[in-house]
Image (cartoon, rainbow, N blue to C red):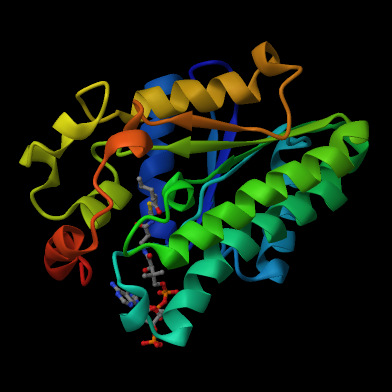
Length: 244
Ligand code: HXC
């Protein structure tokens, strides 16, 4: 929004969305429309996109950011817990991309940025649900980049590392994550911040990336290369954060 976009934000909780949209508008002077939807319900997405197009008359950029996650060993995951994360992350990304393609992008072009994760690169312990869900989204990024490139649609993924001040960090890093010194295992010796992710999405969404499609940009300070993937010690984290 600081770089000129009017924005629509969508999630299940309209109260949180409304507060966020007011903050974003106050900070940037741009319009922000909050829309309530569940990415698992295609009909709700159709209605939301219809409303968005009525309000703004065009949509140039889609950021698929919805994700469910928690730390849990595969042996303790219920069938429904695994399915829930696949439904939100993988099917949700497809559902929203497809609806927006049908209603706008096919005829006008645009940019899709899918927020994914590095979890599958090393088979991160306690993350089989989110790791497989996000790996599927990285595959989807390539397939859609190939099929939709001729329609002037670029599709890329962005895989963040540990980012302070986020819901994901609170849930996945454990209660003491920010003060635990875990950052010392990251090559850049610190956690990332939200502005760094925003700037990286801005790059992929902007004309600066006009010849970039079908790829994943990892924005994690080198974290996935070096951070622990040790089942017993990570279980210590899971025991006090998985039920947040
Ligand atoms: C084990 C759990 C669980 C937990 C839920 N479930 N939480 N299982 N450990 N902590 C199980 C439930 O028991 C249930 O299975 C099934 O999951 C569905 O739960 P519901 O509560 O009915 O579903 P729903 O409300 O739709 O969604 C639940 C949720 C969601 C997916 C857990 O609340 C959620 O994840 N919110 C967090 C969103 C978030 O923080 N996203 C950012 C992720 S960041 P049963 O069998 O009992 O019916 C990220 C980045 C990773 O992913 C990379 C970092 C480096």
